[in-house]
Amino acid sequence: MRDKMWEKIHEKFKKYPARIRVAEKMIELGLSLHEDGKIYCGNLKISDKALATAANVDRRAIKSTTEVIQNDPELFDLFNNIIPAGTLLKNIAKKINLGVIEIEVSPENEGMLAAITDIISKKGINIRQAYAEDSEMQEYPLLTIITENPIDGELINEFRKIEGINRVSIY
Image 1 (cartoon, rainbow, N blue to C red):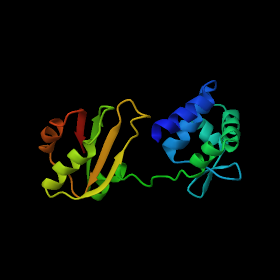
Image 2 (spheres, rainbow, N blue to C red; image 1 turned 180 degrees about the vertical axis):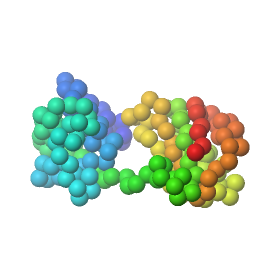
Image 3 (tube, rainbow, N blue to C red; image 1 turned 120 degrees about the vertical axis):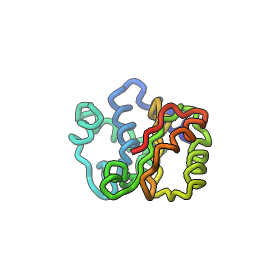
Image 4 (spheres, rainbow, N blue to C red; image 1 turned 90 degrees about the vertical axis):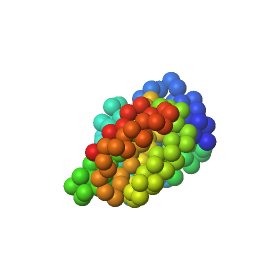
């Protein structure tokens, strides 16, 4: 499904790189397009100027992108149903005594989350949150895992044994 979605977006906007950046930024940030033609994050309306700045495009690219999406039932169904993922605890984890494991993985990362969480659970560590970047949007996606307690460095070696891991950081 994801490949079909990206093909559809890139095919629809192939002559308009700014529109592709707008569509990708909307997906990255969890922004949806509603029936009123406005862009939202949850129930918070996002200004065209704010999205244009985030996508590094002219504001007119926002309007033209939303018009194309609204006139394509398949794209509109996709963008109308996007929801934001919620709060990522990574930046506040230290302040609330949680652990953070950040793992850069290769694009071919099938089964990686299961292997990593298996190592963590065998150590009796509770996972509070896991967030994986989309491998279609990032060349080297990051997997971020927030744990109930800070993690010691000895787990780095165990994670590095998993094929496809490029880098491991523990905060």
